[in-house]
Image: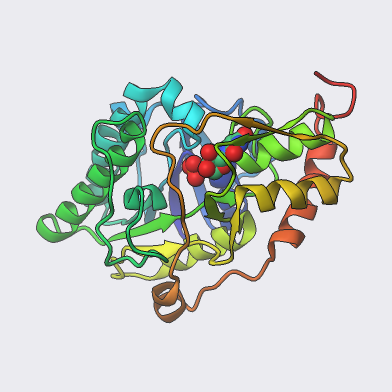
Length: 318
Ligand code: UDP
């Protein structure tokens, strides 16, 4: 049994991770400022004695006392509309917030795992993306508040590993979806499902020929746990599902699986929207013995079922 700090533990991915840690018997300290969550994802955990919520912004430090064996740093706005709504907060949590977590790791001797992102590859000139690829990021474009914050977070993580003897690890997380994505989160999977269930047009940005590789959240959480347990493995390690689809294909599958009559509506492409994205997961397979098991259709079926149960998602709702 370990005591694990999860920053961003009330969010979409973080809350699933907290569930898995508590489930396997770890003690979890969730540190979250609830800026993109109302805490609903973790309500069920609050009554568990192995779970504690510390509501604070890690940008100002991580006020956790006592022994800590691992720190999993997920705190950050993650969907493009949200990091564009909170640009300075996103830069702050990626930089100062990451350093605050690394400082706690140095003090406690905890292993530190950074949740980085496929966004560090930007508009990739290598396909699929391997960890050795340095990326092609516009440092002054609107997405840079997220991309460069995560790139800085990787740099400072490596520096604490090299010069401060912290046991650090980095995972680069590709597009992930599943239950607990907020209906208004703005990511493509939640948008399409909510739109389809509400008989509103599915909003395709650009021509929909851009691709992404979508990983179901349970698979991703298994990868995060494996990385947390893989002492001295620095990575970075890609975590994602290599099966790649275009946004148009995703829209068609969601239309079909929800039996929706919603049409597609085409909208301007966001600036610097990557045209393709697919992880090479050879390293995760070899070093973590990890690969995703849930297909897009299986994962979408579970996600659609969950969204159907959510208040405010349905045919009569505007
Ligand atoms: N997208 C879309 N319609 C939407 C939301 C997103 O066509 O309602 C596109 C977006 O332009 C991008 C892809 O879907 O090409 C994935 O977007 P998302 O925001 O989910 O994640 P990203 O990979 O861009 O961080």
